[in-house]
Amino acid sequence: MTDNNEKQAAQESQQAQLTAAGNEMSASFLAAKKRSDATLAKLEANPSKFTMLTGDRPTGRLHLGHYFGSIRERVAMQNRGVNTNIIIADYQVITDRDTTEHIEDNVLNLVLDYLAAGIDPTKTMIFTHSAVPAENQLMLPFLSLVTEAELHRNPTVKSEMEASGHALTGLLLTYPVHQACDILFCKANVVPIGKDNLPHVEITRTIARRFNERYAKKNHVFPEPAAILSDAPEIPGLDGRKMSKSYGNSIMLGATAEETAKLIRKSPTDSERMITFDPINRPQVSALLTTAGLVTGRDPKEIAEEIGMGGAGTLKKYVTESVNEFLAPHRERRAELAKDMDSIRDILHEGNARANAIANQTLEEVREAMGMSYDC
Ligand code: TRP
Image 1 (tube, rainbow, N blue to C red):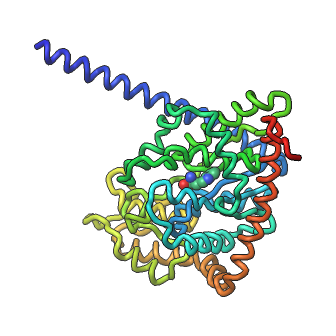
Image 2: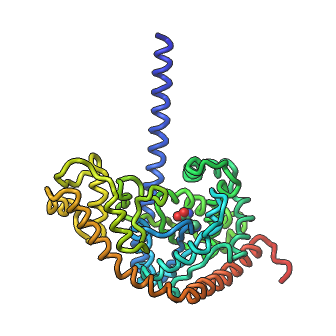
Image 3: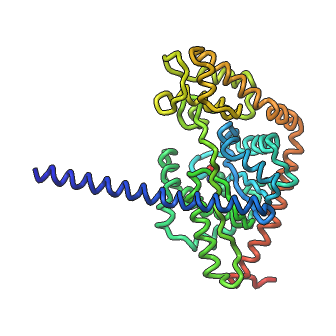
């Protein structure tokens, strides 16, 4: 009896803790979302006042989820006149893997997809962090501004460590601070990201604030950047699970029409013939409908009604055709650009040179603020 009571009390307390943690998380998410919306409104009124930085890890090719989740938004910001910057986070690849195999190929293919999607390298700076020493040097003062406990509290780092099956490396533990270097070296004030990267922008804000308070009270060196959280629905993988390269359920922007058709043909559905849009009970059929909805701009429910008793075969045919039609211009531009890989390298070289000039300047300001500029 007592045992049971204790057990129940323990369960209740655990439940209460979980709920509290959940509420705390959603409270900070809601605050971030509010800041994101308010910042976007200001950005629309005055785009040239804003500097955007975001980026990708060069671990593979970009897929449709990347396109709708972020690439499209970057192109829109660039075309609105925001000062836009894209980092290819090559050092971040080794936070949770033991190899840099294929890294150059991945980097160059990212550049190809950016350009094919409408990123204009004369407007947007594209660079890799391994090529910008002064950016990386910011890591030293920044690390002094955070505690070990704060680093260990980062939920994304924890889940990435668990997913990788590796021990927690020093780089994995500290990479959110490295990401603060990525963002702050060019004094970005808007950072479009997915929810999982929110803790990294939070730590970036903390670092900027602490640096300014400690060393630059009168003349702040760093802005406190706002995360920009996209409203785009998360696009599921073809099997209804999260879109991920390791599940083989993602449609790559640069795949061929045939590869795409094959992937869609192989994607699992259920045994019910009638097509309905029901993400909870029919995640696989609904993932196909969501995909078709995004690429056609149509409501997935309407597509489902249209197909009705046509079944999975008709649905897959529709998804294949609409995805391939949507991606055809991207793929054409990509193939054209890929004929001249030297110019792709030149674009990266140019971006890296610009990033170095900015990083050197910021590092100089940091040294000055800290009283460490004795040699000039
Ligand atoms: N962590 C990001 C990702 O995995 C990539 C990234 C690196 C990034 N540095 C950044 C994103 C700075 C925004 C800002 O997707």
